[in-house]
Amino acid sequence: MDADGGANIIAGVALLVSIASAVYAWKSAAEARVANQISIHEYQKHLYEAFVKLNEHLIKEQHKLDRDKVKDFEPYARTAVLYVDSFLARKVIDFYNDCLELVTLQTNRSFALKALRDLQDDLIEREGESMDRHLEKISSTHRAFELLDGDVHVREGKTAMLGRSIDAELMKKLKIVQT
Image 1 (cartoon, rainbow, N blue to C red):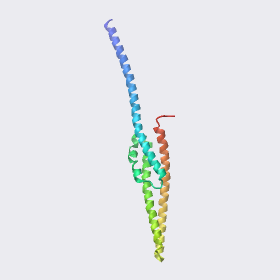
Image 2 (image 1 turned 90 degrees about the horizontal axis):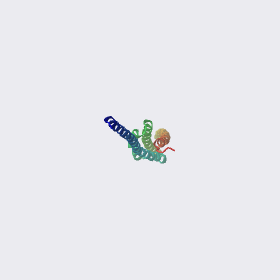
Image 3 (image 1 turned 45 degrees about the vertical axis):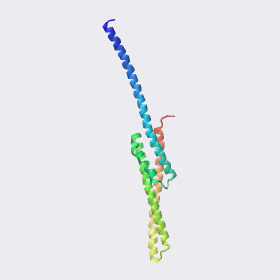
Image 4 (image 1 turned 90 degrees about the vertical axis):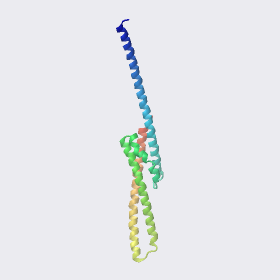
């Protein structure tokens, strides 16, 4: 065997080794992508579980949301853009902000209702001109309460509809096994 033949054999073996290495590297990269997707999916799952918890609270306690339960969702809303597409992340953030606004509206409605009831209770003690001014206060407070109550109902409906939309989209995007 001459030197050229030996060099060709070595080159052929080197070619086979490099092809095997390339195939192994390609398979390793594919497995790393799958592992990365599983890791990301874990974060997405936590986002979904926290969303479901807040959404169920909204459905169950629609007229009296707990501020602390809403605030528990804040870290998930803040980091949603890391784990879902920007459109869905925007919806998640909007849902969180709507829930916060709903808590504020509900609190304001409770205060307005208490003020209205106090004014109505106070009416019994009024007479004459003082009574007329008091009735005017009751009437304006009642109008303010009705406006606030209407805002609460609109926000509750809007937020519940947004919650249903997000739930469906999250389920579709986070599903690993397609049937």
